[in-house]
Amino acid sequence: MGVRFGGRADRGVKAEPTAGHGRVRGWLSPPWWSRNLTVVAAARVAMSAGRALAGVAAPIYLALEGFSAWRLSQYVLTVALCAAVLSTLAGTLSDRVGRKPFLVVMPLLSAAAAVTFAFTARVPVLFVMGALGSFGRGAGAGAGAVGPYQPAESALVTDNLAPRHRNDAFGRLAFGSSLGATAGGLLALLAPAGHVHGAAATTAFRDAFIAVAVVSALAGLMALWLAEPPRRPAAAVKRRVLPRRSRWLLYRLWITNGLNGMAIGMFGPFVTYWFFRRYGAGAGEVGALFAVINAVTSISVLSAAGLARRWGVVRTVAVVRTVQAVLLVPMVLAPSFAWAGAVYFVRMIVQRIGMPLRQSYTVGLADPGERGAVAALSNLPSQAAMAASPLLTGYLFDEVSLSLPFELAAVFQLGNALAFWSFFRHRPPDEERREKRFAASAAQPPDIPPGGR
Image (cartoon, rainbow, N blue to C red):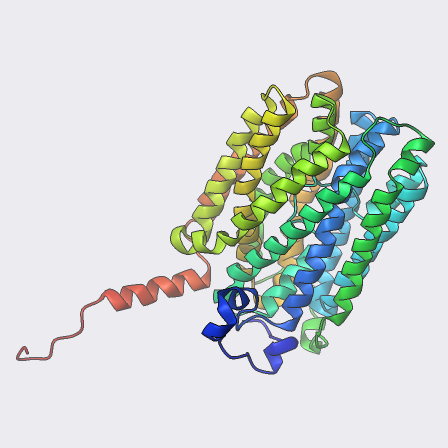
């Protein structure tokens, strides 16, 4: 088990909440919750708000500035490649120098990118700052993703928890992300409803980008309150390229995450753009849809831990990934924005269940001293695929069809579900194995002494 530090973890846990405190207070602040987890959750809310707003405003803004689907795919490629590098650094270096620096600095880079978008439309500058800030790459309904520092964040959260509480903690963090993304979707109403171009578009979208900068900077500043001891010297001298004790896990995740990365790369960065091109939906309409999705699906993430206890983490993730893949097909065939939005809404309810479980499972199976590295390196094939596949999407959008890229994404995501089930169905996390052993021992009848009763 990882070292627990900061907050209540090193001052002793609090007493169980009494009946007078109520169930709500007990759920919001359970005995195993620490100050570090409170800070991470608060930063999650702020960062998710910024990423949700940027995910709505940036693609439409770039389209109004004259970006074709092919040019937009080049932008997504640039951002994805830089995010892969930053994510790898955050994960591998956080095992040596600590998690906190990355949770402080990277949100501030996103804030700087947002300020840049607010005041200039120069393409080279947008590409450079967008890449450094991982800006505007995801969909506004993808509340779980907070940026390239996520491997360091996941490792920090796991360091502060006993294994049996990990799924619950990641579910609560995803709930916070949904709340933030709901606010970000509503802030998209700051973007103009009409189709403006050039300097008028820069001025019209300025308030939205300034709002992204403010909440992103707030996330980085809140992380200053994290309490983390220095890394032990023994951990700092290791310089292996790949984790040694968790290598078996890493190889399997490379395959499953690579397939999922192809699906996400062809679908995720283009959802807002697709609604804009396919149905003429503006930033306000798309933002309102994403706000409703994030508000309602915030409940579904809270069911993740319960489903994992009932079905097992691996089975739950495989099932929700399969349903996600299937629902892409009726979405792209929908005749109107309302119907497409309704199918997307159902898909996101399902998607939110699997997200915290997959993150929890990955860091839970990794060796405690290699969690940051595994969280980062396991996503390298996914990030490479997410960087390359948008080029294909951009070409297909411009030259073939607005539906074909999403249908191909469904095929890749179905392949991900099958591979995940095949690789991990016999490798439940430690807490599930312990629960099964306990249940089996409790079901055995007591020994009857010689001579009977």
